[in-house]
Length: 377
Image 1: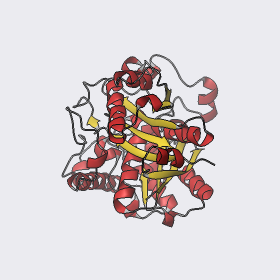
Image 2: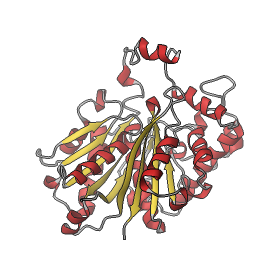
Image 3: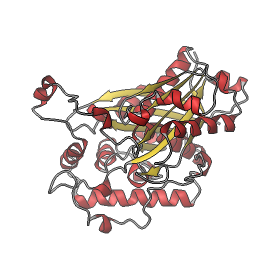
Image 4: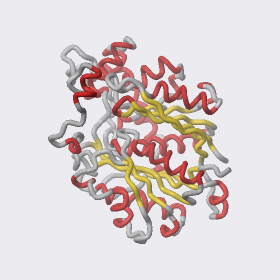
């Protein structure tokens, strides 16, 4: 039976909204990742069976099948196909799952999986336009007039008893850990160096809980969710080269990690952000591993209460949960975040000799992906 391994993983630095990457078309951000993978690994792009690319807001500058646009922008042969995946915030993580499944099934020999989002050029919600995505049958089922992730984050904070002080302390820690990672060079080997930007742009050094306490709640007048304890709106892309162990060996590639377990789960769509909890439990159950076996967890920091509630339920130690910071400190380019997080995770595992890592992220509709990867020597 074939396996699926990650040969390499790269990402652009993450640019803040209307910042250094806002002038780059998302097709060109995609192309930068594809070109970097080819240059680093010495493959002929004509041998890529598919580019599976995540993107959430597929309108405007992201409307032209942005994965295929990226292939063409990179100057790759016209024979290289691409497809675009939308599982909301988990789009690029789902792209990884699809590429891995294709390799294991023998549909692909070599694939690239990843994603992109330019939230500066295509603002969140653009795809909705003037339409109403939820019919009365759905709204009536839940007795609501619409779904809102910010309100969901407030619901999570209340359910798990997370105070404003606690979520601000977590958020300050995210900035602190990212600053330490950048200063230690932890991201250097994974970054696509762009002329416009060579380091994650959203980091705010010196952030403290006391400083964050001065921000006004964003969704409820007496709520705890602010711009400071939420993920940053941002631009960026990431991608992974995926194949089987046998094909990697035949090409002279040394894989970084094996995709050990890949699962999906879904939960209450109103509170919306709790899906990582059942997804993690499902991944651990299916893999036969325990929390103690996992040396690093990447739980996307959509809002601080998401990883905090997850931790309360799963019981992971502080030092292995988002050890390099996360979306609160550097940003969350929606369709690309799954690949950005996986790139951070596998490089961190390799740099620190960690055998197993687990990544999960909340997604609109109450869904979540969870992926366990195993380090390979």
